[in-house]
Image (cartoon, rainbow, N blue to C red; front, side, top):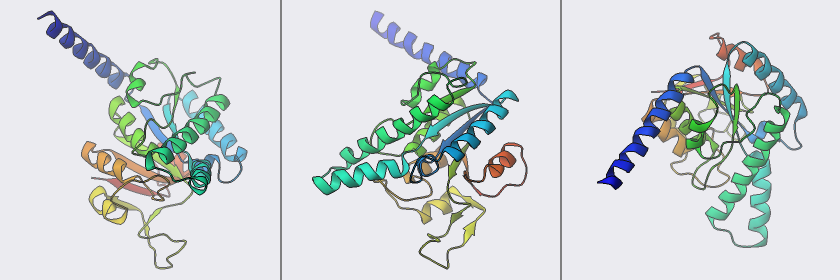
Length: 253
């Protein structure tokens, strides 16, 4: 009986903690920043400076952010090098990708050192333990099996956010890869059901997709909207935050 009571108490406490964070972070903006923006080839200090200016301005105006860093080309370079030298399991490649996201995340943590909470989140559940007055929280990859897109959706679900911003280096989601298919058409608005027909069914390390298929399935199930924006044009992000017309793709139920 004591053991059952203890278990109930722990679960009840976790629920209280979840609800407390959920209510206190209703205005929290969850944003995934692709590694292609942080390190397109070399580290893009111009993008990082522009992002820093925007986030500092927005937090000064009362907004709060959770930023999840992607791995991008840094991840793929390590994955490609490892696979060239020795046979690799997907889990091995995933771990390399995860550590690339954490390196990029630590870079963000460093440039935002005067604003961000000093502990980087990897396990989405840990966002519940972050200080309620933290204006900026940096997060990165957690464990193999999915990309940081999924972690963004999971974090959004935990803090009660119904929208996630996905920053990449393209203006829109397209019906096909516009780099290889001249007939690819831009998409401004699409449902999760239709979007999931356009992307691969399964996740794999280094997958090139506008949004992780595992994350897309989770977002649909949790009724979370994703706005896919071009992070090299931060005016689109500013417009989206302000409820204005923006350049990008809205994905929703």
